[in-house]
Length: 358
Image 1 (cartoon, one colour):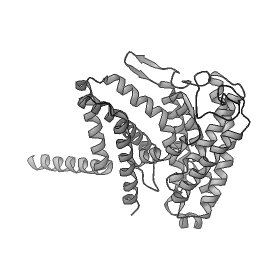
Image 2 (cartoon, helix red, strand yellow):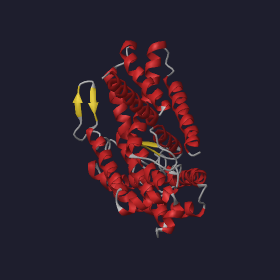
Image 3 (cartoon, one colour):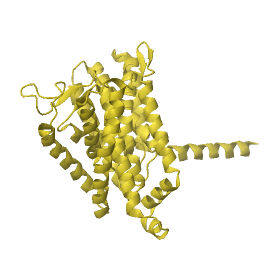
Image 4 (cartoon, helix red, strand yellow):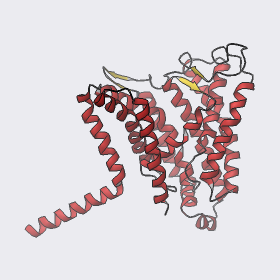
């Protein structure tokens, strides 16, 4: 009997070690530190439920942008450092929807509809380029993203926008750096079916919208084409020998990722409440890349679970650490701490990518 008990204990210990190994020690440390922040928060005068609300909000704003990483990772195109290409398509959809006078939930729907053809065109061009430089996708994607953002810094000034809510007030031409969307699609998802429990507010609509897109991507990856995409990412030589058109599958994944990025920036804007143009998209790719890597993805393998875990950990750390530290030391250094924590997480994630691909 005692031998049986010892055997069960060994089996249980092996299972625990296996689970911890799969979850990853660094990820476990980050999760434990985030849990510690939540435990300490009430003792520093921080509104605990208010911080939970902030984490849920930031998750709902950013999760779709992180989800945009999944198709390109599955096809072997690597992490999408060219995320600004899709974001620019989404910004075109947003600005044109407002320019043409759509309002309320319809403006959000029309922003997606208008952004879609831009995302398809940009995605095809982007995918064509990545097919030409196999092996250096992530480096080239970074420069493509920077180039597109820089080009549109000029285009936002010369495109014929006239809407007073967006245009500069002096001449009525060119778009402002930042403008609100509260009269258009601000909060259209976050306020839909919102659960208000006093200090805790759950943005149900935005979470459901992310869940819908996540289920769609999961379902696609289990279709014949999705399986072919995974095969291309795992072993392109074998996939080519099996009759799969590798370049076409890779391009499809880039188009999907670009479209998800376009939708993702619209989701971000409806929650954040503002459209930010010019250099703002420069800073959007690294947090999304870091989040999915922290969630457990590698350069050629990613899942919806990685997206969810990584976004919660990254956004939770960025939200909780500055607030709790401010409460502990009674100094307003929240922005400094936010920059240190976010860039530290990005640095960890990028070094982790190198380890994962060895």
